Image 1 (cartoon, rainbow, N blue to C red):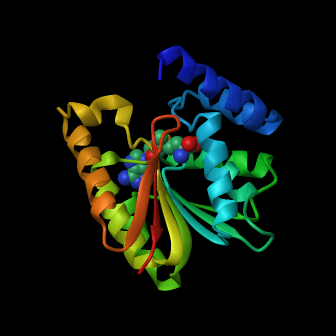
Image 2: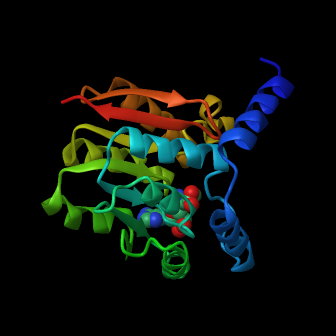
Amino acid sequence: MSQSLSQRYHDYVGELFAREDATLRYVRQQTAVRGLPQISLEPNEAKLLQLLVRLSGAVRVVEVGTLAGYSGICIARALPEQGQLITIEVSSVHAEVARAHFEYAGLANKVKVLQGAGLQVLPSLAKDAPYDLMFIDADKGNYHNYLAWAADNLRVGGAVVADNAFWGGRIFDPKTEDDQAMVAFNRTLADHPQFDSAIIEVGDGIALGVKTS
Ligand SMILES: C[S@@+](CC[C@H](N)C(=O)[O-])C[C@H]1O[C@@H](n2cnc3c(N)ncnc32)[C@H](O)[C@@H]1O
């Protein structure tokens, strides 16, 4: 597919199905204004994530990598009334901005922001397993550890979703440790005996695994 045709498909889908509402526009704007990295999901990816949450019937979701709460808002919007998103963020500044954004979006009752490193926080969540869906969007070097946690703590039929599966194309010519980590993560997910999986070609690649056993 030519570059320009794939770009047209992307724009077509975005304009029809993934237009940001005022809240998401505000959150994206504030992410820049507050000086946070502008690496939230792009609208097409965020819409897909929202649909995956709905499709899986998820009630309890864990996210690693909150940033300013953009993806978290999309997840929480797809949860039922009694649903809950637990989102883990290592940066206290990001966690504070995200809390304000969940409040602004009217979703504070559904979202718990836990400040800390994913690997430190996740063990404390295991006692309340199983969860329905896990979204991974944080430090690349630990993606394999987050996947192992998902294998242990998701229900059968639950899903693990991870952003940056294409890692900006660096999976084809890995040089850094993070590049290698993404190559290894994709390979592990593809071969994982407990997940039926694929990468959805949207944005930077959304890896999806449904837990089968
Ligand atoms: C790509 S951003 C997340 C974007 C967010 N999911 C969205 O789309 O709105 C990655 C976030 O992960 C956080 N992070 C990095 N290492 C982490 C770790 N070990 N544990 C938890 N969060 C981490 C970063 O501080 C950053 O806010």
